Image (cartoon, rainbow, N blue to C red; front, side, top):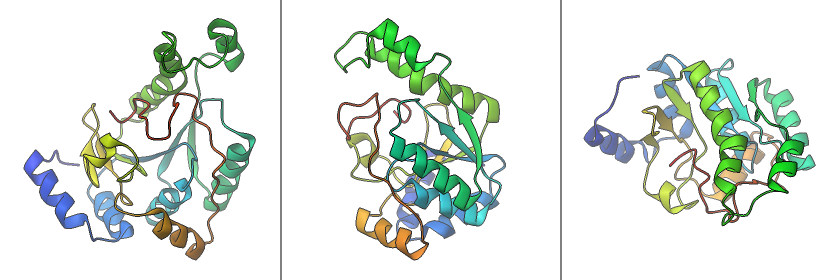
Length: 209
């Protein structure tokens, strides 16, 4: 997909604000070569996964599993994978959770000097490895306005720090609109989710900033 200037990006984001997610996805798919969609199967992830595979059933779905998900999240992931027949590419930390428990004595708090290395091991390194292997030119995400201060500053289209075009088709959608989308498409949701790298739900882990 061609590289947009900042002015073009801003113009597209203004234009796309009222466009249905399916149309955004179709436009992007028609103009890119190696799209991927990432997921951690947190709440409402089924929406972006359904929307993407509805347009491109074979799209690569990159799941970076920290190894610390709740039993409910793992069961939810299996249900969504089976229901949508997802083309999942699974990436996990190179070290086991048992190793980290021994070295870090459990999950480090955000003010612990070990927290940065813990985050690198469980989230950043697997994600970087996935991106290096698949070399996407487009990265579909379920980022939404109102989730964090950083996410409030972007738009439907933005660029990652590595220059990959990030597309967040549901960026302007509320939980209520997504609830309706899930019901209309008979999709499951799961709220019992745990991110070991975050102390607060509105804190960035480092993938997007």
